[in-house]
Image (tube, rainbow, N blue to C red; front, side):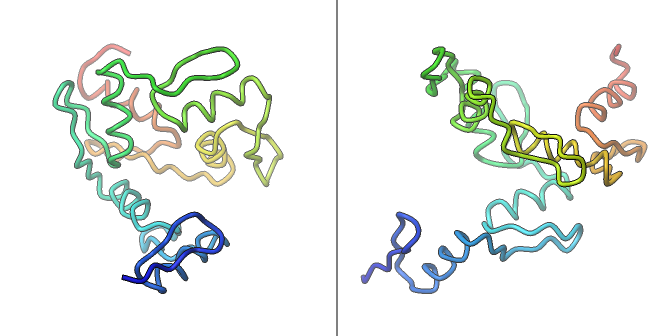
Length: 171
């Protein structure tokens, strides 16, 4: 089978159409758009994971603690906690982490780098997810909904605290 190489990445593909798609991903083009909220994704797997956010599906369940995940990569990182695996080590201080993305974010403590900046107020963050959470302050978006009473929250942790009311757990 003939292999087609992406000129901007290191991957090779069996179909020229896959190369075209790969090259468009490097330019930031997004193919998969959510009908529910309009968010767009370059990768199908991320789009599917995002759809699970809307429908509440968490197909990857830990057989040790019962915690469930929307994404396989999140589940794999979680399993490292039970196995006490921390294969990613900071070269500056030696701190070991369970996932490569955690290491990337952690290393910004040493560099002071805050590459994710709010386009409304200029506040900068070390992680994209922290910027996304911050931006909800400006947009008023409340994506975390209680499936028992319908109350909505801007932040996941606020929903988690609220859910303790329904379970009778002390806050």
